[in-house]
Image (cartoon, rainbow over all chains, first blue to last red; front, top):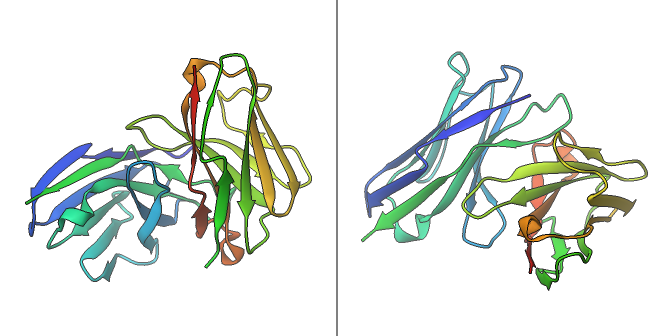
Length: 113
Length: 118
């Protein structure tokens, strides 16, 4: 099955700086890669996603890049704000099979003033 | 947008009792729902796939007889933790794919149920 690794496990940045979270996946058949933000005790919320036919996608301060050859994808948050503090999960999915998301291990992002 | 609800949001029970958690899709039908377990500071781990009208599909290592899943209708799936023990204490989250997400891309998550077994 799919295995998704995520780094770093914790990340502390100063407000205004950029944050980068990286994930690798094992199943070359995976073709959909969402990123979720989860605040303490809350449900995961989709913040951005990318499909395998695209190398990069951007939505305001958030961007995601995908390297299919290396099976890497990354989340980039620019101009970080305190409200960006949360746990971020990457995930991978093969839309052609059983539709099961495989989550990364999570990154706890702390944006300090 | 599509909404998934869970009930209860929080439950405390004594060891040995059973607890039922409901997951409902409020404005759309879900023939499939997913149940996840999340321990503190850990990731979401898929426990099982709930299928309307048929048996659930459990992930490796998940005890079928301990975590009973019933998908009785197109909008309701239930997870029953039988004979709960303290190690079952966790955050349980369900999700359902949206209409355009039969491929799994669009997943609507419930708000989660925090279970504490004393």
